[in-house]
Amino acid sequence: MEDMIVTFPGNKKVRASYRGNIIDSDQRKEHGGDGSAPPPFDLFLASIANCSATYIIYFCQKRDIPLDNIRLIQRMEKNEETKMIEKIRLIVELPEDFPEKYRQPLLKTIDLCTVKKHIVDGPEFELTWDTA
Image 1 (cartoon, rainbow, N blue to C red):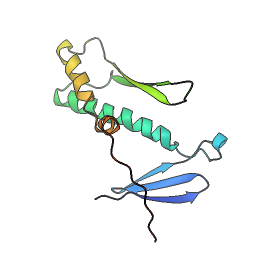
Image 2 (cartoon, rainbow, N blue to C red):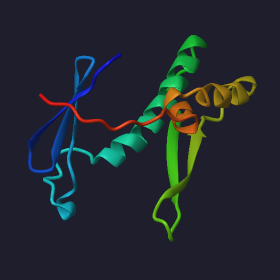
Image 3 (cartoon, rainbow, N blue to C red):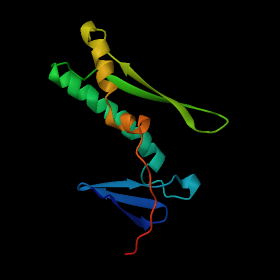
Image 4 (cartoon, rainbow, N blue to C red):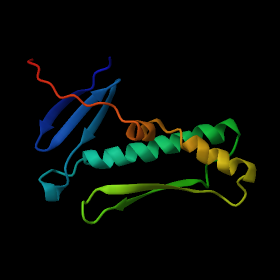
């Protein structure tokens, strides 16, 4: 079992320590925070895009395909009534000279993103009390 330890450095800031890394979040100024770091939901969305992009890196590096002219765009479509995101679209912009034979395999590789898989087949959540 791995633990992520979360502390509260002040105002609306949150600091998560995990595997030797520090991940800070904050709320926007209009929500009472200092705006010193991304809000948690933005980090959540970025984790999807970053994970997908990592699979692009692995795919292209394995085939010696340069990444210079490749971009990934993540577009979120929100339900205006519920204010919840109902669709996340990942758009891969490829240069014209990207090998045709690798276009579909690249999409299949991106689809392996572990963040996305954890959303689709989500873990069980359990809230408990403990004393320090």
